[in-house]
Image (cartoon, rainbow, N blue to C red; front, side, top):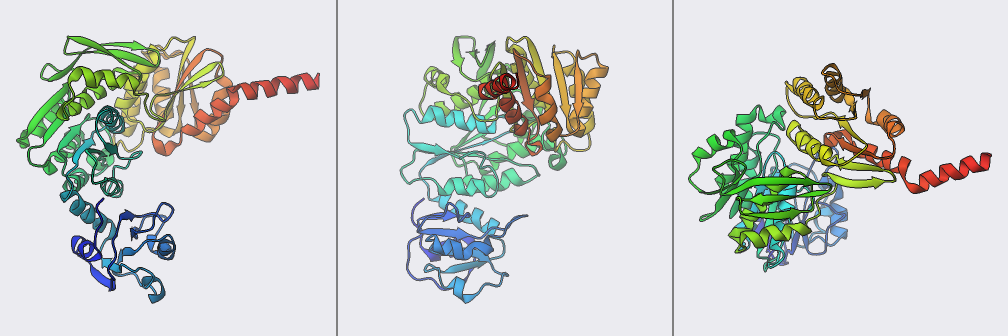
Length: 474
């Protein structure tokens, strides 16, 4: 970000001085003293389990020159006086963070790409960055910085000479995408998919589509939207917007159409518009669709389709998103970052494409699906009984519902486990050499603990230790 004067910051956040500023230059923004740098503005955010106001002294010690705090929080003069650039009081520090980011965005010459969607946001963001970085200077939001804190921090990270920045925009309640769109004002808005996700806050599929489409409310003049052509609900929601649209998907209306896909272990290849095939180093036809979205964005930046598509052969995927983990004679597919019925279907497609002596699915609860959550798990259980799994393990209350329904529908072998902790003890004992094991569940289920338990159980060191112990006893 460009350097800011304290008074410019105060005006942007509509705050009041709680401690007067001396002439300084603010070089960055931080909300975490562990990563704060000299010259930063520290914004004291408050959450369920933390209060940034408790760390103001640490922020000053880290070299932060100014601070934004809650106007109502009592703070000693001994702390306030440590900030040479002054301390600004506001009614809501999270809102102030967004206001300041919107101000900084309005002064950026950098092109902003914003990606939202029920599934695929982080992967498409990373694919776009992977392609654009071949010729241009820029950056993408780290990890899943996609909320009212992460999006502003992404904007603050932009260097004045960056050609582009790729932001990720998430939501679990109505109105959140539009609020973030106001901050990022994208030159290119991307909607990857619409699915039954976060229904506790988003109600139903029609509302999900409208929420995702609201990213277009912030579209910069002359901007464009890249959207999936495969969601009728999104198509209806987009009627409210008069913008330049580029569609991708399987539907005949797509300008970038997936006309063929061939699965391969750990990857695949896809056909674009019936004219050419391209390799992918990440598995699943859903990733072919993600690739089309990234290619459409790259075209906006001057890449031709073939150049952009060919670049993706070097894209190797992200942690905990269909990540292959070899554990001795067992292959784990770690898809534990999050889960919903649509992403489960995509992951199972990948699993069944692997050659294996036995295909195993360990499914944890898929959370935030609203009042119909149990029924949605039953629906998943019924179709899981038809895909040829050698073993299905349901973990948690909802995972067990899916497993029980699969058993009733004729699944070959089904087991139910009450918790992840119990699964960590039980599941490794059920696995054998040659198994391919997909582990999936909502992030809050912490199914990655099971991935680690399987890895430890089948690692060569573990196996060697067992052999030595057996020999010592003999």
